[in-house]
Image 1: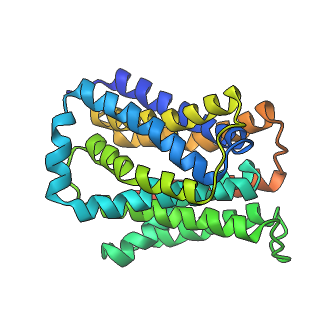
Image 2: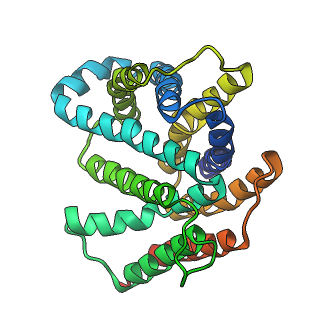
Image 3: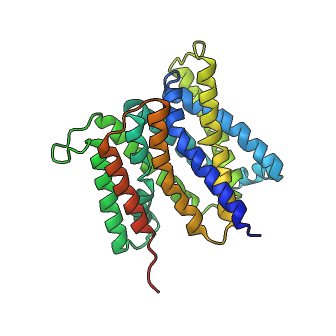
Length: 294
């Protein structure tokens, strides 16, 4: 049953919540290592998704869904949340959030290229234009506008941010053939990843004693609203609407809101080249949305 007003509310809520997570990442990384963030935030997300599945009456699907394809969920869980968020958090640790977030935002353009390779989807002319604009935007952001000099403030951070786009796009490509309930599938991914994440954290000798209440609150926020509940809100919005494009286009506001929050909440300087690069990425994404003529 379609409900456009409710779909719009869910979509706006998801976009606003996603807009806050770059700030939450930086606040959390002040006290946690990247692997600690992955482990503890994944636990928060798992508990939240269990609650959602309980409310939706889908908890009884967990066992049958997993046993039908255990290798699939093992691979998916190792990609997301484990590898994806570990690499993403490390990128945020090395780069200003105002750089890491727009670069990560180019994942949809990466998805087009990967879909052509792995799903044999044809790349349209506007897709090439989108790729050119998107990755030009990434270079502008990463070099702070010095395109010809190609001097990166943190080459490793930029490389990790780009690698995160490959992992996230790969995750969605793998998911194209998954017919299970999407929330159940995400919960299984987190359940698989949890023991690996905590094992790595223990191996690295992570210390949990000195973390403040503020740190735990920031981490819980990340677990709930980057890795958990917001995904459910977004899926619900898409399910309720008849106009998927209208809801999907809301996401274009997210990175700009995020930059404003980074400037006002944690006082991060937003370099003019970041805005230029982000605009190029967003234009690329809009070009990519142009539908093929009938």
